[in-house]
Length: 344
Image (tube, rainbow, N blue to C red; front, side, top):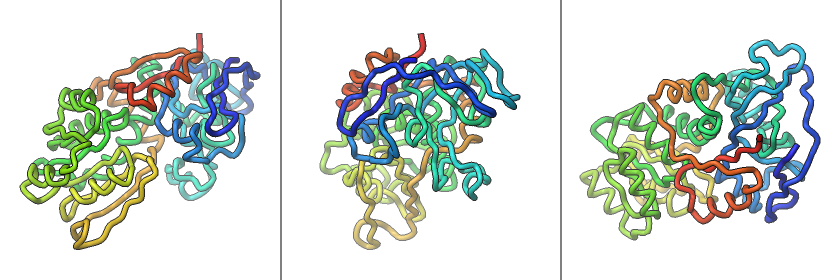
């Protein structure tokens, strides 16, 4: 089968032929009809996040497709079923795994981000049927980004719901794929006003279309003051930083009111620094959330299949174009989510 593999940090992905895996007992082989290209893959390819235990490795952790073959003992899916793939695979036995938080496992087996190959290939070997969420109406290229680009903000926003209030705005920093889904989900789950910040005029225009109450240019040196003015000096009820740089984390912390919450979702390498009476108010909670659970993915898929959560802009590219997609996403030229389509 064809696969795009990383051989060395800092180098382009290599398109090559590798053996198609055969499912063993409990395994499911999925034909990959859609694999979302995530910004975290850029950090891995560039060597900014060095988590891979081996190379070459096939990246790709946002996947959806069609069941191609099943191993002995698999009973919940059969060949031909369309499925979304939960990618936060764990050991299955630690406290995090047995309580449903496999993405927090201390010995992760994540698809495309561990020793296990991911979905930038024609086929993906899934180690257990529980990682598959059935699709009834969604096309795989629409469903694939839901497994991370929607699931990750969904978890962060659900955990922040006690802080979100109809009469106080939330702040969304960064309107990439996750931020766009984040804005949609805040409007859907909480219904509060949203202030959106980005450096791209096109993404700010899109944020308005998605329901942002106010949009602010992230290049403005007076952003914190503008947010204070918009909130009558109080600050926002919750901030969601989908970038995670030093600058954006500082803005999120400075903009959040007392009894509010700052959620870091982006992993751009910044450090969060909080000093009461200096850059933060009293009783502001900070949390760095990670991905989501299988149950939360089922909920996201249900929202999407019912039409309550509409897709962000999706552009589809062939596997042979994957390095071009990497370059365009790194330049900020992808408006929503780029989805690789490896299977013919």
